[in-house]
Amino acid sequence: MRKRILITGVSRPQGIGSTLARKFKESGYEVLIHGHSEYDRHMQYPDAGEVSSLSEITRLKDSDLSNETGISELIDELGQHESIDHLILCHAYSTHGEIGEWSFEEINNHMVTNVTASMLLIQAFHKQFNSNIGCITLFSSGQSLGPMTDEIPYAVSKAAIANLAMQSSHAMAADNIRVNAVNPGPTDTGYIEKGSALYQEIAEQFHSKRWGTAEDVANLLLFLHSEEGKWVVGQVIDSEGGFRH
Picture 1 (cartoon, rainbow, N blue to C red):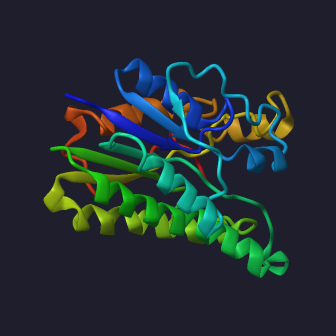
Picture 2: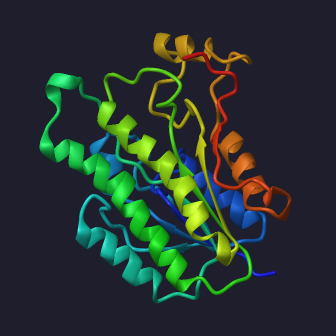
């Protein structure tokens, strides 16, 4: 059975998206990827834009999903390829700012990137879908499990994603498209220096005293997109290794 998948949020090798792309390719999927390297460079990730190791994977043009032009560019380019039957929306806009630091632009960057782009990509997926079975995974966060007071715009946008998974799973049920959301918990993708006091403090909050890894996330998503995972529909899965909020 043909398996073609688009994975967004792929623009640096330590990120969850890159690991997903590699793991799904190894599992026999035809993989298309999309990223926004400029955002990763803005966030000062040391490996931003370095995804050359992802061989035999179709990389779509970088675009900014915080505006209508960038979203349309991705959807238009996707339409030039053979239809896909799997979709993972791993992209995210996330910046820190306490309540007195909010701005119209920053709030909207979160909402458009995380919510509007996801909704329009789901719509585009549904329009081009011509297979018997489809699966979509969205990415939530731990916003319902504890306070995130220094990143409330992000938390609010991820609460919307959790609801989007449930709502869209019902909307596309007749087409046999399953939708779920996954909260991977704190995942070691290089954004906090290993060996630092903060890194170790967070590690101590897991049952196994280690951070989650991108491979942990990939293992769950490979199951959700498999035949064995077909009974999981419209769920928000907190896969956090017992993390204490």
